[in-house]
Length: 57
Image (cartoon, rainbow, N blue to C red):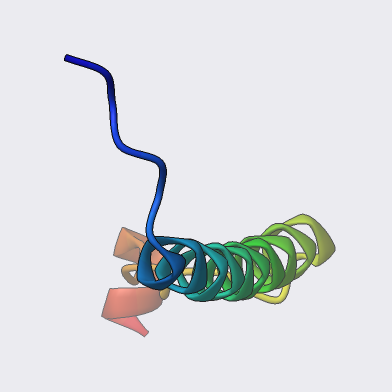
């Protein structure tokens, strides 16, 4: 029993899935890149708790 050749619908689905996968991969890469740039520039600093000397003033 031999394998059947791919039907046309499988080829179309593969191309759509590949396009969607590449689009999602590009979106993730952009978000990751923006995150790395933002963190490395120092734009993101969590709020600091007041120190003991600041709290008494």
